[in-house]
Image (cartoon, rainbow, N blue to C red; front, side, top):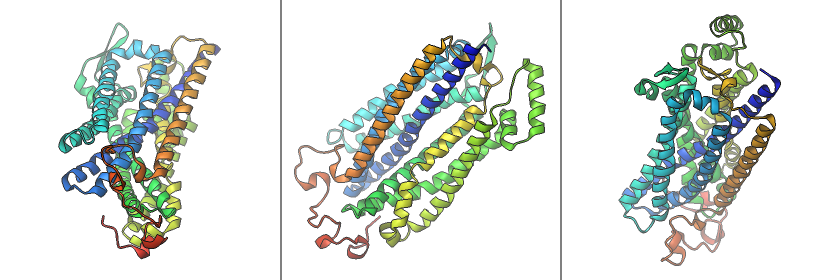
Length: 449
């Protein structure tokens, strides 16, 4: 490649890595929290218990904030995708266009519409109608993720197509929709999203319990919910991850050889691909591919031991409310699922190089015909916008999480007045117990979970 083309390609890949990886961080928490909120509201609707309704409102408000900012990052990512990768849409748009269009309809029309009904439908819609709205939001969120993975699965394992006039044309929609690369990744991401939500809930709850919050019972329940969700979800994530790793030898043998460090096999595959496609380097970067996989596996092992220990501790009331070292550990562990997901995404995408459509279209042939100056300006613009959106989202989540359930705007009945409007009672002591006791585990009756 010429120097200018090589620079544009490197900048375009960096831009896509930053924007797609950044957007995915929002998606994971959104999917997980939507599921948790829908399940909590189901319990609240059936049981009619106010504590469950308060859980829905508090965690639902954090979900809404993360979703709203995440939608904006998704728009930014799509803009840069169209700007920087016109070669991909030209060559494979007939196959990829349908799945991307359906995802747009699902995410920006169906999901957003019913989310609006859910947000503004408190005290206006019937309880079952309101419950149906959040379940539609949740299911369409998963549908949106699935359709994105249909596209990504085709890039990693192109099936169900034929070539006409040098372009890829959709030939077998069923094969595309049931692509193993899509289905395994979908299961992996769906379970990983629940892990992310579980760690987030446990971390926020631990923060309030560490500070001896007056809402000790509320956050004790939330902490247990987060811990009890994280461990089984992590096991499910490992199952789908293991299935993906076992399929690599068939779907992407070069990535598999790099991951396993098989030098002789790498050399053999390089020779085969050179004979089939001409001179070139067909081995992905070992630093990014194997490094990403190793980081992912190490963080997974850390989370596995941590969640197992937490799963056991959560059965003991004294540990939930008084084990302050565990509280600090739960707070510090919130970023772990994000680290694992990001490194796993690097392993999946970097290991496909030098192909953008595996075995069919090289990345260098998919990049747009832009000047290095234009690409640099685009990278600075989109990266700055992503950093700003991420910072705003983090600030809002922290701000709302610190306030606690007594100051939640979502679902507030403006027609009600006084402490009952939030489902809270006056707490003159301000420490969660009679006469301001600062030890809820000793002075208050055992909470009901």
